[in-house]
Image (cartoon, rainbow, N blue to C red; front, side):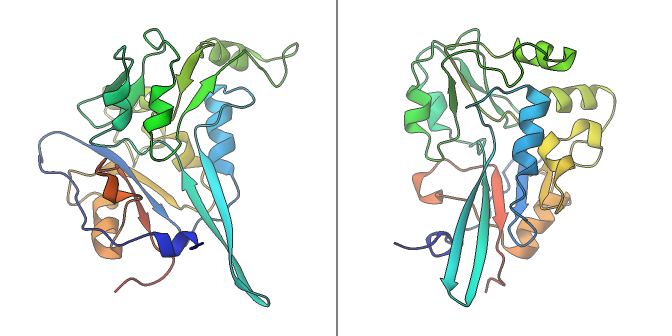
Length: 237
């Protein structure tokens, strides 16, 4: 079985066609990722996600043979695709794609059929089957408030912390530069491996990294056009 790096291919960079509308996306530098899972934990804490519900996961794999062995880490979350299969499969319209490219789930409209999870090429959704808490009796005010936002019998996934982005933009902040307008996983990353910004702006940090480091996207062949790019650990020709 091929390892993760061998399965990744270098695809043409597509940072969007329209330069007027913002299209938010993320760049993940695999050379900097430490596999510390801080992105996973910070996401769970900020959103009050219970046991069994994960929006960000880090795939780990060893490469090579002893004594030359190295560990490889691949952070995965919803890819906020330009052509999301989950949106096409959703029978109620609960899955929505915003004009800025962010894909969300309206839990008030979600019927929990899990069709979106079946068609997602990245296995990026969780089903909230029952209400579960880490500290059911002694939860703090933050936990109690955030837990109430997650409805049993609905789907959950990464939404790029869109509430932080929207609130920051209203206050004149720039997502990707100002921490209060940037996803929690990005600002909490210990290795500084995550970048966020406007893919439609050729001068944004994310666009320059994709261009200069030849960023690639996962499973490009399925035609979903993800908004998350990866930077290889090795120099790409």
